[in-house]
Every structure is written in structure tokens, then in C-alpha cells.
Length: 73
Image (cartoon, rainbow, N blue to C red; front, side):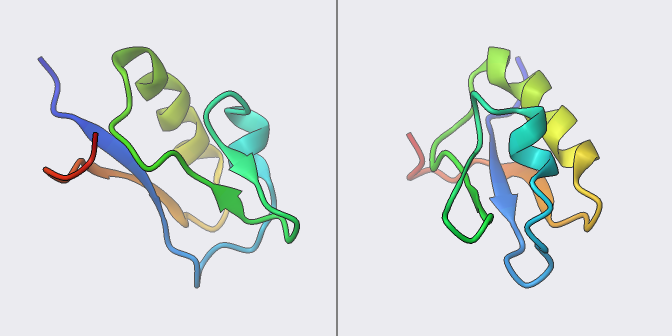
């Protein structure tokens, strides 16, 4: 079984290109400024592939997959 993962964004690196939510619209939303709104929970196995695609699409490399914390549900 794979380790539980979550999406994380480096807000100082994010330029709001929208590639992440354009690539994974069912997983990532955006706010009025174009910044990503990420799920604050562990990703399901089905969501992990879309999350990897979104991370790869980010031209600023601001999006990453991190190990889920114990408090994430």
C-alpha cells in the first residue's frame, strides 16, 4: 500500500498560471486571484494520479505531493 499523500503549494512560488487546476479540475479549485485551493486531506488512490499530473504541469514547481500528516483526514 502506498503512503498517504496530500497536495501542498509554495504560495511564494505560485504565479497563478492555473495549470494545476486546469489539469485536475475535480481535485483543485482556484480563488479569485487565480491561486489554487487544495483539498486539506489525504488523497484517495484514485486522486493520486491526477495529483501527480497537476504537480508535473506546474511551470513554477510550486505544487508538490507530501506525506500526509497524522491530523489530516
